[in-house]
Image (cartoon, rainbow, N blue to C red; front, side, top):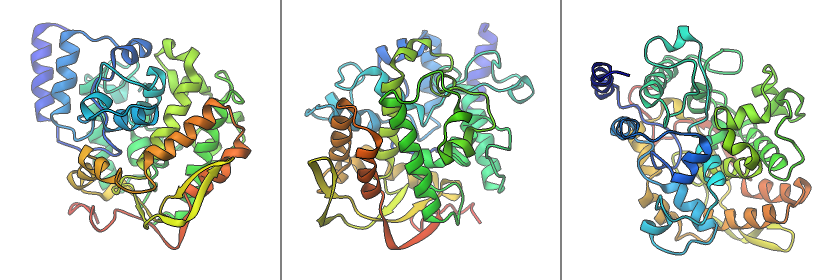
Length: 369
């Protein structure tokens, strides 16, 4: 890219609509080891692009997911340590998996990419931030217009994970009015799939259209993608760590389910416990509603995903770090799905008055309908 094009690109970047995104927040760049494994170049210009793009996106600006994950792996320091980008407890491939839900690698055809994206290369926020922002803006606009972005629509993975049928990756409903039971089943299906990869039952070369899990068939059954294509497209360094990547993706889902912008939960119940084998914890609050992001106000959502919101959450008895610790112990022991499924059933239990998905009264956008 010559100097003139770079100036033009940065000028365009500064005019991009500030479209917020979902999930507990992530850092914009990740650790050095994570970038190395993911095959992400970090030139001074690319770093400037990422940071410039992030000024206009309430998404990759606080390492909340990183801090939660590092605490799950035993970090006991302050946010400057546990959320830091240099010293971590969690393995880099796990952090890459945690990042995947928000920033999955994908490609688009030249007709979609136009002049903004390099369609011959894998697209991620960290590799093509300007392209990513323009596509995200388009997805947001289409979502507000009521477009369906699902497996049959042919849109890029980014559209589906944030505004379409794959919002269950963030413990959210795919659309306003989706029954809570359906969202919950998608969440449990994803948990089963990621766990099966994490313990080696589903291999990296397995085609997704052969995985007999309903949500995987519905979401990816039409593709010829493999597990490798899904999680490590353009990142060959991560492939030998596919189990950790899958476990990280699962942790992201669980973490998001404790963010108020994603899920409305009742208070935890001291009389109920969620267990994996003999190890257990106070049951998290039952789910009253999975929210749907499409019609939410981004600033309100971002506030609920902030570091401050996470620190307040840690004061609760059934907190997300403890949930993650139990899952980590089970992962390290390579427990079979049959042994951990009851824990997920408990952690994602619905209240008797669970409602269909909505933006949530505290998060509804004035631009919604």
